[in-house]
Image (cartoon, rainbow, N blue to C red; front, side, top):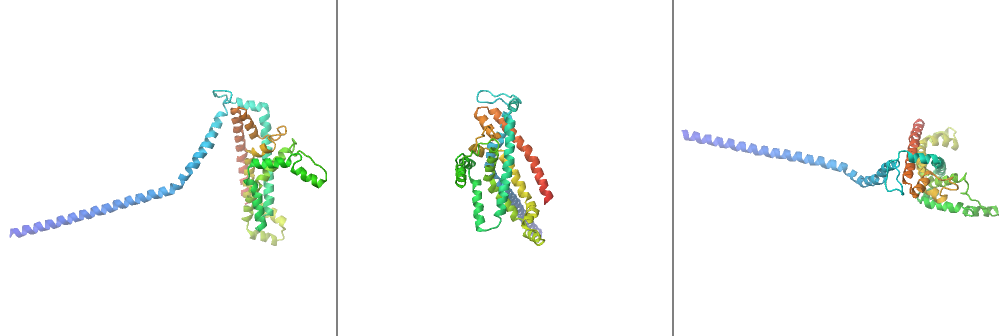
Length: 337
């Protein structure tokens, strides 16, 4: 009787062992599945992060170029402005504010800075007036207006030097403008349009404003296109004429476009060089010598530290003007809108 009991016990022990082994195997499989699932989810998260940051890789070349050709020279400009760096010395040493004092004492720096500010204000005026007039005249979407928009935008794409040389040929004595005036007047007219120490800066500013008027035109056109036609129609139904509609409704709603155009034209023209160099080269008598021309001429003479000091002063001047100007225009824009 004992042997059957022992055999049955051994059978039950074998069955329980097999069950335990099966449970262990299932547990290992379940653990492996959970482990592979967590690993898979980890890989998915990594792929999502890589895909999210992937566009940033395309910024690396542009950032490297910007760092090399803008940020590094800007930092070096702040350093070399306070040294005696020149083509006539083999060593560079700090000299404090000597460069600034020498430039300030000779009077040319303040004169050129005043001319630069006058040039910037005149360019901003002409560019915005020309651009606004063109935008109003070419607002309707007709075939003729589309062609005219392209033609007026062409000077924006042209080289500033090329534009300057063309206008210099037109405005010189016995040039194209004098020939046209002589034809209508019936007698010879010879005027040195760029020879006046008073009006040359205004004429050069008008040329610069004409060149960039096409860009201002597009900005104003985009602003005009965003105005709700229902507002204009309601004003006309109330008896307002087109003149009143423009100055009472359209022009105030162009505040964002005006802010952009005034800021970019004023601050951009303070860094002008090409047009002035091509037309007058700073003459006559230095009446059109903006600060960048003085910087270029000083650097060509081997006085590197003085030219970097002037560049630094121009940079600081632009910053001093830009911050309150943009703040005022944005505040005005917020009040209107």
